Image 1 (cartoon, rainbow, N blue to C red):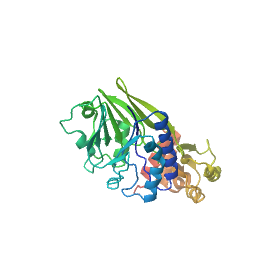
Image 2: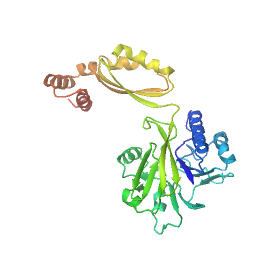
Image 3: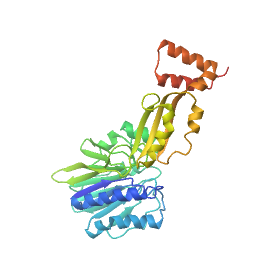
Image 4: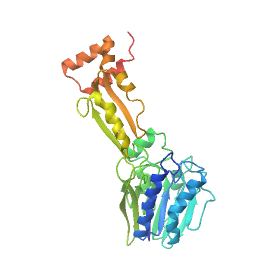
Length: 338
């Protein structure tokens, strides 16, 4: 028995369906070439609870080769698409919004779809016992023992019901297929292998790096292998230090040159700028695939404020800090009361 685990497609996300569907075609190709029996999707297949019919039909068209080859597709809802999948089952395509247990020969799939009060509650209920050679669980939840997961989902206010390493280690599963966190992570808790495959196509600057799917091999013992999916349009963070990587007068032209690139760019602009307001005004009408993270020190604003100027000169004279320290100190002082 072979399973392929993906998650968080977010079909219906503004202007990204073409890229997501092309990535899904890669997933279908992996299923067919690797002899996969079941494709698992652990939540947020769609970006909204009730996606347009055209979005659903586009998805069905891409996965049609799986149905024709007898590959089952099992999906649970996530926090984005709960309420929109019920009653949408097609032959070979199974979508769940309530907990369920499915049996495929020697494999049992334990399904824990997202619930506002936490899909982890169902996962951690007592009474779970091994009853098949292979036990696999699908859950859309937050594994908070990983600092990266805790930081990102906590920052976004999306922790919901958390799972910890101690709780996961005591579960009677061979593999815990997780969804919700958007970057690939594969690890082991005791006898239980665990994986977040992340999105199949990057959707934000928090999703840098190659996209993955996880191939689950039910052999003498269960094994999990990473499959590199690449991506259509990467999100790239680029540091530009004024006077080093780029001169101040070059910034507008250099940013607009990124217009012809297919990727998304976040330019972190640091260093000293003679007139920040003037530079910002020159950057109106930037390409849609470019954003600027302003971390510059505006010398004109410093010169106009005696307290800022005094702090700036003192730090520079003593050589006690770099630009980050100067920038942070000036940011705090800008709200001072004379």
